[in-house]
Image 1 (cartoon, rainbow, N blue to C red):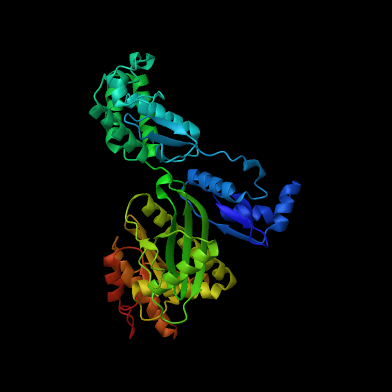
Image 2 (tube, rainbow, N blue to C red; image 1 turned 90 degrees about the vertical axis):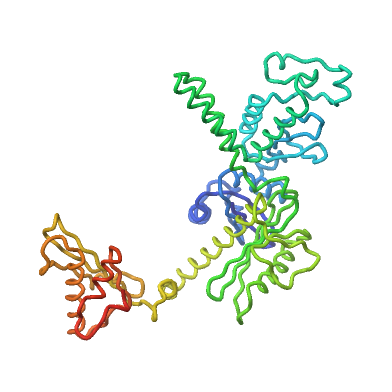
Length: 469
């Protein structure tokens, strides 16, 4: 999801794209017939983005931002319409229904969901699985005992339990509501297994139509088990921070959640001057980002406890649930920002990119020097005959094709990959030594520990490959 800003720092357009680079390029690399689009492009001064996990999350986040900021060029989406949620009322005998109005005094809300028909199907499924009442009668236990209500047609159709005439006890009704709540929360795995078993049973009995209906129920349940966290009324108001670093560069992202909806996102970059601790840097970044976004939220989620933050804040690390998913999303955003910054720097300075990549390789393999020169070997044969080998060379992380070599195995009979490797390495580096050339900083072979030992055992004049493999 991306946002365009004008020179005054105002959001003028919110959009979503699977390929952000391609979508943004389309605005600037062609002539637009639409005057509205030309005006939009003329006013773009900056772009920011938020990474999400799914198309559904992108829909919801786009909706949140448009409703909050009313960007000038998102005219067609300024209808104020909310996505639907599922409500479980706080009545003595709760109801479950779809709503677009959130009032936490009425009950518990789940969602919203970007596709209304999905909510309709889920509620229909819940009423098929559990005979929970769907009427809006204000029932109390006293009224039921006085016989104020009578069962309706839905009881006779077996879609309602008839609680209004005490056809079922209160404890059983509460169990059904609890199970329905688990399904909506995405914790319906036990019920999913039951439906799956029933589907296979019906299929084995050749009742394919009934099995198909069970399969549709199962797919719907599994879809709800991965509900969105972009908008979730249980999240409340909270600021969520992500942290990452690369060499002396530090990246901190913030997601601002208001009334359970992500409404702002921002990432900043620091350059370490001294050997500052990450706890100190995160505390500094939290204050700066909260000031930039004007946040007064007292609840803050972080990947680790920072130093120097406002002691009136409630700062904690989320370990599970929706708030852990928000923390994971903040971390995903900061990593993506870091990656984009690295790619941008690599384009401006290709040599710096090569040094960075080789430096990472040096650290990963614990090499004494930067692997500026790398040789890579592989052997091949046809059922033990026509044995050959190849050597591919890299200089400063780039293929050096003029140095590539192809060898025909001369001293090895049959398919002996280890002996072939020893011969090729010996021939290759004896020639390098005789010519006064430079031995590689790193040798790579296609194979396993046996090929590595074969290279180490190769006799190469006065030189040794032991520390380069």
